[in-house]
Image: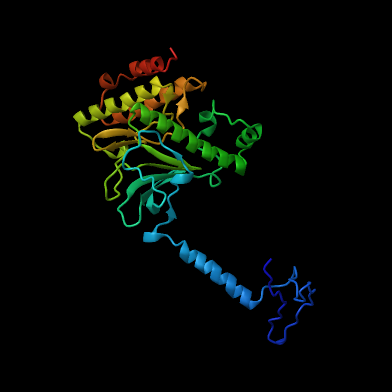
Length: 319
């Protein structure tokens, strides 16, 4: 055990002298360290230097914010795209917020080895304690249950612990859905990894960090509008064939990347078989999507929403 010289100091101006606490002496005759008092000035300097050295030795290169979290994370499905950076010596640099939402914020992140351009990723970070309730989470969580009754009670009562569990459950659900759908060839971003309540996803945009626009931001001409409708409904049909509904589909969670519709924001993806309200979730997705296209001039003779819903219900095995 390292011996320290523990002393009591009186640092007031009117008492310049210091009093040394009496200490026991060990077998060697040297004073043994006491369990009370304060560190000597020499010991303070030594510990401060250790802290400073540790900070200097672990300082991140290239102004990065952290080392890659790949090693501790759940990884996306195989085959993995060749742009995914898996080296543990890589660093992550946060480049700012892309989107702020009610339940999560999306940041632009660059991951790469020091001295290389790296790869741009979208870092979706779910909040927990900042919000007492997730958007309509009671309905979406039907059919999802934790194994432990304590965890289920915490989630039901929305304690701080329960809200953290819900936040991670959203992240787990979205990562699983994206992995499953990407493997099937669905138009979704590739899920790179999940660690806790953070997802790292394929960034859909330009090399300069400009994100792909949402469908709601576009004013397509008639031919483009029709093409986008059929792309979007094809994605709905693929989800339904897997027994899933997006659950919150709108023109705000569809990206259009170089003419291709990409479905995003899937934390509330609904198992329409296990969820008692599964058919209604399918119907709402259709209504929300068709409402935007109708508002841009696409007629019901093209959208045929009632027929579409029947097809989705049948594809999901509910008819």
